[in-house]
Length: 240
Image (cartoon, rainbow, N blue to C red; front, side, top):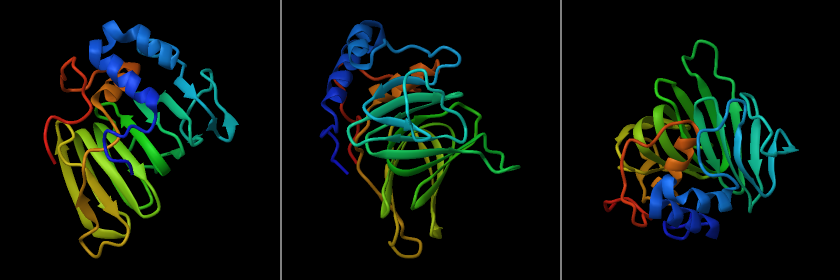
């Protein structure tokens, strides 16, 4: 996992600088040059805002016209990126990632269930819509929250950007915690073999920004529950 500030795509730095310079009202043209369209709420029936590089939905090359539904699998090649929505939820799936939008178990009370098999995913979810994210090492309960997740076979990086999440290590029910965050207050690692009750550890803030959260919230007609300055913003306003 890259330390924060080493953005994994130089286009991300241009995007973040453009958004920070004037938010969306002034930066729409600059963002449109990068993403192909100024950020705004997507019309009914459209799933993708951006398809960059090799992006697959159910093993078929995706385009801006490709729908994404419950039950689908979305994958990105190493240098690709996908920005899309499913119902009231929005996602930025980075390169080298694979996520499955699962059908929630009957009588679970969930409205959506995601499995991040591998890779990096920035997500925002509608209020009052219980959701679960599963990775190889963690199960995370979410309700009306913005979150960032990185998954590999040995550990999960998870940041509750805002809202409340319940986090549990997959192989160790004694390793669990609830996070209530207003702005990236408590990022965590959920590891595979840390020992009973010790598989959740404090982590730094890495690889995502408030501007990117604002971008994907805009696609579903919302804004993040915090205000940040128009000057360039590349990290949280606190130390960890």
